[in-house]
Amino acid sequence: MALMMEEKYDDLADLRERAKAEVSKVVIGQDRTVELLLIAAVSHGHVLIEGPPGSAKTLLARAVAHMLGASFKRIQFTPDTTPAELNGVNTIRAGEHVFLPGAVFTNVLLADEINRTAPRTQAALFEPMQERQVTIDGKAHKLPDPFLVIATQNPHEHEGVYPLPEGQLDRFLFKITLEYADAESELSMLNLPHNGLAPDMLGEVRPLLGVVGLDKAREELSHTVVPDSVGRYIVAVGRRTRELPGVELGVSSRAMIHLVNAVKANARLNGRSTATIEDVREMAPYVLRHRIVVTGDTTVDNVLLDAMASVPTAVAPPVSPVS
Picture 1 (cartoon, rainbow, N blue to C red):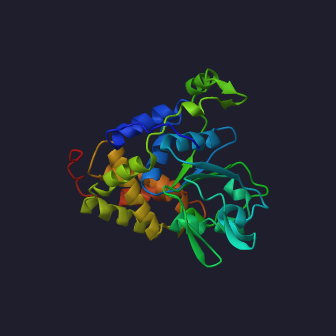
Picture 2 (cartoon, one colour):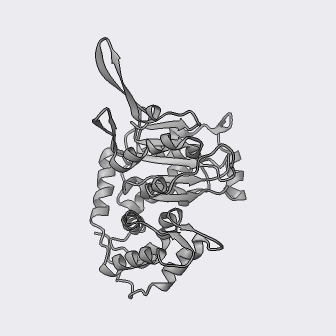
Picture 3 (tube, helix red, strand yellow):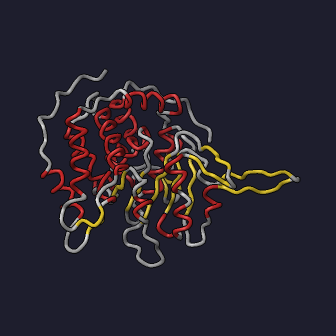
């Protein structure tokens, strides 16, 4: 799609405010979700958004794609969606073998109602999400960079759905529960220019990143300091989730890597070059909640609270200025 020249920004803290301002031109009252999607984009993560119909999941994904300066594709999952529609297929044209790319060959893929498709098709996303490539007939095809999956599901649908397996959930950096906006935000929505039901302002959302800007943002993350005490706290909390009563499955080693990446990005978005234990506590619910399986009367939220409360913490390291 044709995009305007990317805007300039000073650092990730500045980018955070600019991103919220741009997305709010079409989606009002979801600033926290915009921040989390920005964290995912700069830290190579994917996001699962769970929310009721009409809560702007699709519109939010489109607006974020515009803000990132990225290409966007949407695929509506149904029981008969095939792996080939996602990853592509080899065919013969004019006597030559030709690869026809699937929906994953984009920067931002909206996997709408991902739990409505069969496990075989869900599994077709494993390689793209983890390896940033697809392998068709033994040949690997690299995906564009960035590649961000924003998957949605409706928690109120119980018929004709296929719950995501733990292996699939573990590939999502965040799971976000999207609620309806507050009353003032919903009132503001009424005043947006509309084309039918959708706000007619997507074209006004200015791109802020692009490839060069994304590289700059990732460079900031690579120079973010994670003190030993913070790293040890992440590992201790993760391991503790495997030991608590009522836990059938605790978090994986991959989850800890995802958590440290989110922690670094959260520090940068708040204008700091050093991560703190408070960053861990802020990010842990979004990163870890969907990876924990409990039994009986145990709740995932209680497991997380117990894990973070029962792990001794050292004095938080001093906050250094942004380098």
